[in-house]
Length: 303
Image (cartoon, rainbow, N blue to C red):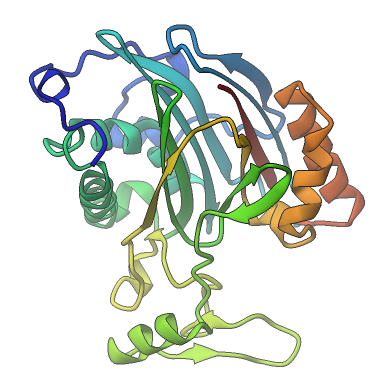
């Protein structure tokens, strides 16, 4: 398993975080300004295998305020560099998504198992974060959020996790491969779990399958009214970054509703600047009449 050497286990976590993810209270986290026109880029500083990223977020045409948030930053633990990337797609408001932007990575990195068992640490942090959100519904409201997160360690290893339908897709030797699982209510495993827990999945003509006729994803943070029938357990995947791995796209379903994985990869392949690539993806999704908020991060690797 990654990061099991004594040097990793014996070091305490010392991080330098940027102002975009500064710590705040529950109430102030719910009041963060939304990133309706957010765009930018950056790169790793310490890793021998350089990592560059670009992001672009645009507000949808569905008539509500922007509910997507992102994280794209680097933190340092002694000589070890962590690239932290995430897309949070809120629903019924942006409070839960904005809370995740501030706190989820901190919760993951504070897990005692992070350096010895990253997969278990990520699962534990997702669970404890969801529990906290549900216990603070009065401050954060009744809504929820999907999530896709990526942790890049020293430019050589990446841990991808998700709940809901925000997605991560990798380009390996020019070919797209989906790294995450779309947690849709009608899939066999999700439907069985929902029904076993006393819920149901509705499928009306002209609509998408929904949990109890309400939510179009089977896993999410928050959603107090559906907590008995939703899961917050993420699917987690480890990817070893080598010369065959070119880039990874993280995006909300505003992109994936109108674009296939290989189409997205083909749009990015010829664009070396990741911020320009992210803009190309959002522009194409808008051109294909996506009405949802569209948020994406492109992470490029140079081995």
